[in-house]
Image 1 (cartoon, helix red, strand yellow):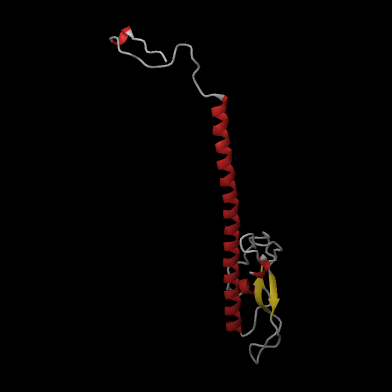
Image 2 (cartoon, rainbow, N blue to C red):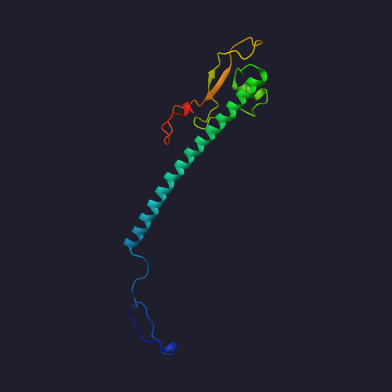
Length: 148
């Protein structure tokens, strides 16, 4: 290190690098910083993917809850189950049949009803429950989405 006196500032001692020494970062320092950035980006990407899957699962559970409530309300009001999810829409129980967040289609699987709800009911045809059509399994619960 150069500790020379600078005549322009009254002879104060200045500490600094010797003249002509390289300034900047070494290749090793740059590689270490890049490695740390890559590790942090990899961790962030994995967490982002998990957050997306959890959001899809939450949307699926909410959609199923709303449709099941609508089926129940329809059945109680009309004393007969709806014959399809479109009946819920046309009767005003839901605004629109939602898209399955797992399949990205409106391809819900419905369970048929085989029971009579009133003496005036002419047919036992109708739906009592709804499930996702996805064959995927939740990575968090190890449960198929079709069983939600």
